[in-house]
Image (cartoon, rainbow, N blue to C red; front, side):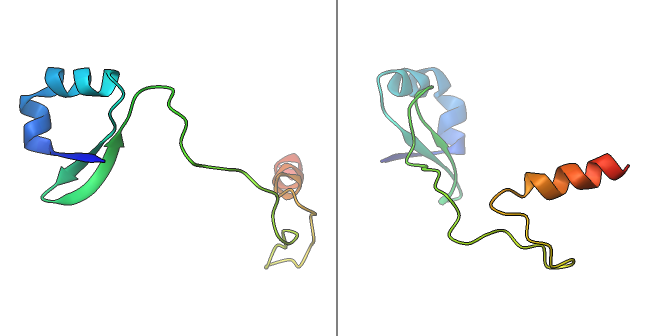
Length: 80
């Protein structure tokens, strides 16, 4: 993957965006430290969502809520 420093990105933004529109992805560096990734809009990334390995357990109450922490959140909000 190509890299670009912030100063170069600022100086050549239009040219850099043309590269991205053409399909290139870039890592933006701040003093040689990666801080962001610039990729074409709508490009899928490698994130996959999977089911949890074990059930969610609230440590402070010991209440098992199944696989969905939203159950506890909604209970808490309904009390208010």
